Length: 541
Image (cartoon, rainbow, N blue to C red; front, side, top):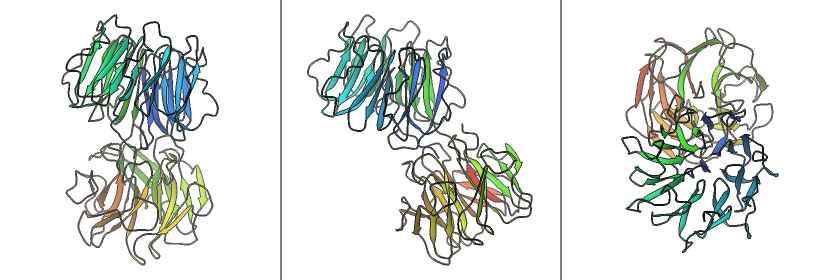
């Protein structure tokens, strides 16, 4: 259940891979790791942006803090306090930039050329970029502020300094994207990296490497120019379907609209060898000899056999054997299964709820063993149904309950005893409707939904509050015993619904929240059975 977005501009070596308000993801790093720049610190989760420098990397967390790793000989990984309120990051050779929500820029690391001395007034900025020894800030009025090394004129923005919508910085040159789709380039031009090919129009994103430049066209093609000794300007065919670009030392990256990454150019350190699976990526970034990507996982199905207390988890939404099989909880019980990322490690794991004692048992690994978290929530005994989701957008999945008798949800923002943080009515009282949870609009917050098996109708709500359903549609048969599930089946950042037919052991998954045929249909598990379906990102890939 992680969101995917298409970036308007990715900023080269200084790339800020921003996901805006979307669901946080994990950073995937590959290539040269001489200084640990590819060793993402634990826990690798909750990131909404990342940037690749020469020998260090930066990650922006959902809470507005920055994590830095790799070479730190000049303090480029020592994030300035207070480490909060950041909305964008950029990484240069030996310095780092962070953009605050108030429009000010924070810079730290090597300052030999004044690349950390932000000109006054330090306000009104909406984007940042870091070259090797110079820095750029894009202001809200469309002008660019540049500072640091200016030996090649890389900090002398050509007139008119207006109408810019994106910036990128390389070793000794800079790029600015205008609102009319043209690119302005200035600074060192020894390899033609500032000679934008004609027609200079229709661009939607820019990236700057050491001696080469990239421009992404609105039609999804990439234009590359400058130094090409390593083939970094030879875009592989087919040159179509790209949604983001990044330029490193002597290599280039392109993100496809199918969420895969294409890499070309210098590959001595494996910086062009995208780790498998090459899917689910939402953004790309390139350092000198390493590469970064933000990746979201895919939700797949599982089954719980209450008779044996066994769980059967599958890592693909296809027919086949379970990838993980284990005992958790007692046999011959009425306990109910649930799943979530309880420890914010980007892997969903299982849990059980015992209605008799109103006790949750949550496990941080998909293996047999005792519960890692055990706590009471709700009255005992009860007939309430358990749910789990990220109710506040902090990346931590927590539990909740739904009372069919009163049509009431009680959601908790911590996996511990206590009162509900959110309590509201949604749906009818005294019904047999079944609860589901998902991020229906891709904003990073899970909200509730209901399924009426009598009419085969889903009712999804985009806020965890009382009110009418935001989405109402039919999917599946009427008067059935089918069970609802939800997940991001196609890695597009939107959770969508599914159904499980215990009579035939068949899953029916839909990639959009509207009426229509199932996009995925497959058999999994015995038929008929009393097994219960669950869904999650079991492997975090």
